[in-house]
Length: 295
Image (cartoon, rainbow, N blue to C red; front, side):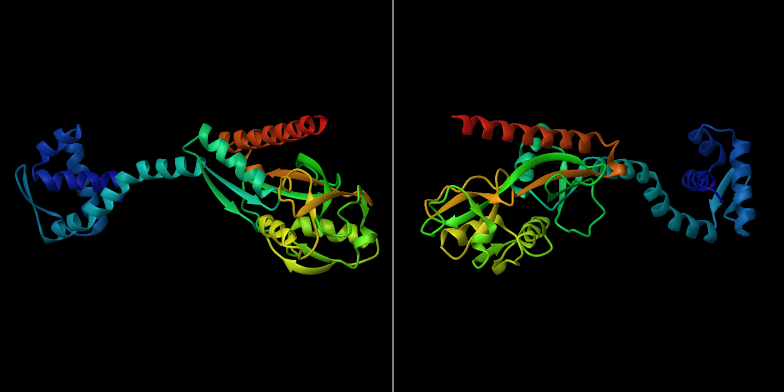
């Protein structure tokens, strides 16, 4: 059996007249008769009671018609549904955001204004491999081979404004090794980078609070509950008078934020367009910060 045979049968069953059915299908009547004959042979049963050119469905034919109608209906709709799914998939961008979530969110918002039909699926999983673009960070310039550098920024130290360190112009990590740190959780790349800088200075930071939200980290600093590492650009400036940012002079602390484009997504116009949009946002942000510092 093939789909064409089954569709021919349904038309013949609808008209119960070979010539009318053949005309409806735009095929010769003998070709339709032959198709029905082959179908009956394959099924091993008769489907019609025949009388000259008139035909009537027998019990087997009625059962086959009943069972086939919903199946053929689904098959007829499949091309449309498949195109809809393909369009939806092509317009969905999967992002695994391990760093710079605020900047990436801003980029998503502005990108949606340009491409309102595009959808985003956001992930935050270091073990996730099913993504279009992954945004992460590493210490200094050690970005993975094949990745795209988005931003390099210094890592500063955020301290409460009433801290003894607040008046300092610069600070070394050795000076704060006994202080309580507010930090990201241990699996996040930024935490790994900061722990590595502390390790280079011969100590392990004493973590008193852990959070995966930099706004929470900021509020805890404002409340004089500890100190924290703070990326120069991607978390924004501290606006509250209850905290200050101090450059770290020893060691020189920095991180590189990078993007990995999944090979299977290289030909996706929306994924590529979003990556370009994200790069442009990072460049503009650095330029704006530089202009602000010059003033």
